[in-house]
Length: 413
Ligand SMILES: [Zn+2]
Image (tube, rainbow, N blue to C red; front, side, top):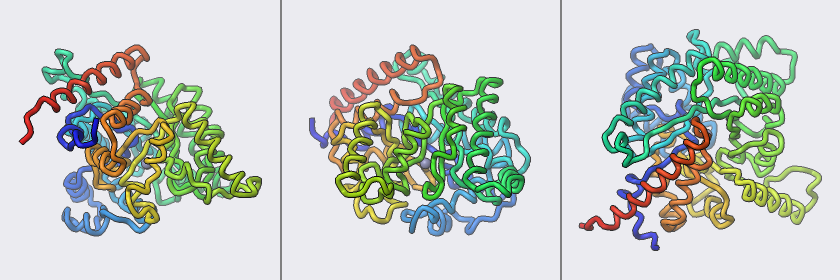
C-alpha cells in the first residue's frame, strides 16, 4: 500500500478521534468576537484578520506567546449559555470533518470569575456537547447502524502553575495560603479540584472521564500533584498529563512514576537525552539508558502519546521542519501514539490538517494511519461500559474499512 492513496478527501471521510483538545483554545473566531462585544471584553482587534495577525498566529515566538490568546478566550467563557454554545460549536466543527469521538478538556476553575461554580461550568459544557451529539446521532445512517455515532468525554485540567489574575477563586486560594511554598499551593488546588470533580461526577453522572495536568513544566514538578491524582485514580478517572512539551524526558518520567499517567499530552521530548538534569545520571551512557528504559516502559505498557504536531512546531522554534518532530521516532519504536489538534483556534488547525501533516511528513502508509486513528478510539477514556466501548471500536473499524474501499472504488478526476 502506498502513501499516494491517502489524500485529503479520504482523511476527511475517515472516522477519527481528537483526545487532546482544549475547549478554550478551540473557539470559532466569529463567536469570540461576537461574545466579546456582548460581554464587554476588550480584544486587541475586533476583526478576524486583525486577531489572526496579532493573537492567533501561524507562528509563535515561544510557549508564553502561544498562551497569550487564552486570556481572551477564557474572558468570554464566564456565562453558562456562552460556555454551552462554545462546547456545542466545537462538537459540530469536529463532526463536520468526520471526527466521531472527542475528549474535551478545560480547567473549570478558570470559568468562575463571574460567579459560576465548578458544577455549573461542567454542566454547561456537557449540555453543549450533548446537544451536538444528539443532533448528529439522529442522522439516518447512524440510526440504521451503518455509521458509528458521535460520542464524547470531558477531561478536567488541574494546573501546574497559576497566578492571582487567572481567576477570582484561584486568586483567593493563593491569598489564603500565602505562607506556603507555591508548588504546595498548586498541589492543594489540584487536590481540591480532584475532590470536587469526583463529587460532581457522582452526583450528576456527567461523562467526566479524565484528569489532566496542564501548564508550564519547568519548576512546577508533577510530584506536587500526587494526592490529586490519587483521588482521580480512586474515582477511576483516566489519567493524562501534559509532559515533555516544554521540558525533557524527566517530565515524562515524573508523569508516569508520580502520577501514574495512562496517557501523555505531547511527550515531544521523550527521546531527548540532552535535557536530562538528574545528577545521578553522570554521563551520556547513563542518560541514554534512562531514556531507553523510559521508551521501553511507554511502549510496553501502551502509555499513549497525544501528539499535537502543529502546536509543537509553534511552541518549539528549535524544530525546523515537521520531519524533525519525534513523531517519526515514536512510529519507528511502535509506540502507541495518536494525533490530536491541541487547540483548533490557537494552532489554526483541524484533525484533517493534523493527520495530513503526519501523512506527508512521515510518509505514512494506510496501515500506519489506521493504527494512529484506532489508537485514539482504543486508548480513549470512553465514558460507557467496556463492552460498549469494544462494540464501538469494532463499529468504527468496520466503517473505516468501508470508507477506504469506497474511496478506492471512486473514479478519480
Ligand atoms: Zn494541551
